[in-house]
Every structure is written in C-alpha cells, then in structure tokens.
Image: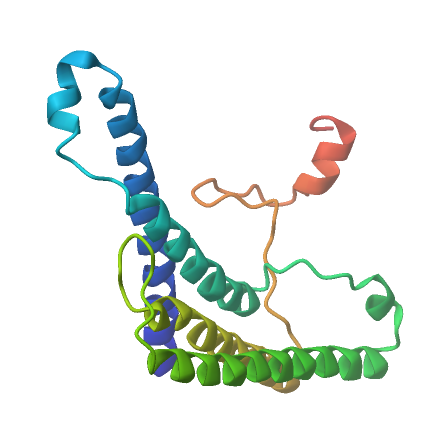
Length: 195
C-alpha cells in the first residue's frame, strides 16, 4: 500500500511540475508577444512575468531529481550492459547487485550531503533573486530526490534478489496502441515492412 501511494505521488509530482512549467512558459511567451502590440502595451505592462523563468528552472530541477528516481523504478535509465550480459548467470547476478548497491550508496551519500547543505543554508536568510523565496526550499530537491532514488535502487535490488528480474521498458511499445501478437516491432523495422 505504501509503495503504491509513493509511486502515485512521484508520478503526480513529476507530471504536475512539468505541466505547470509548460503552462507558465507558454503564458510568458504569449505575454511577450502581446507586449509587442502597441494597443495592448498598457494592459500587458501591468502583468509581471519576471519570476516565471526562475520558477520554471526550479520546477525542472525538481522534475529531474524525482524523474531520476522514477527512471530507476521503471528501468528506463540507459545502461551499458553488453559485457554484463555476456557473463555467466552467477557473475551477472553479482555484477547487477553490485551496480545497484553502488547506485544506492552514491545517491545515499549525495542525499546526506544535500541534507547537510540544506540544513546549513536554511539557517541563513538567503532568498532567490526574483521570487524571493528561501533558497533552502529550492535545494530541498537534492536530499529528497536523492534519498528517493536511493530507496528505488534498494527496491530494485531487492526485487532482483528475490525474483531475478529487473524492471524493463519496451521502448517499441507506445501507450494506447495495441500490440500485434507474433510481430516483433524491432525486426519489422529492420525489414522495412511486414513480410
């Protein structure tokens, strides 16, 4: 139950931040365009979008940190596994578990260093340039995203340890488009069409 809530929260956070950043960026572009029309300048000058670029940057930082954790959970990170796949099954299993443990250790260290940094900067009065919000709120993405990614590495490692399977994504599959049984889309693309 906890994992389902966490998964959904992660997806909602990523999707909401991306959608909000897109809407804000679109509104800023429209505002800039309308500001160039002399008849509308009196109205557009009353609206200040000076904060929008800064906010969108912060939103995408949060998306990147939480998106990386989502990537670990779903298996969409790119990995070079040519040599690992050529190893015997026992050595491959050891190498995969070692890689996942190394990822968990690294992100755990980054999360701890990020927590220390946020704690120290939280005791200052630093604010962001345009929005003037406390800087520690922006940097909170580092420990939260890193610890979530560490948890996801451990979650994937546990799943691999118990089942022998890693999360994987079929990059040829498109959501909403039904797959045709017995047709390999990779082979189909190489041949240039159906046989």
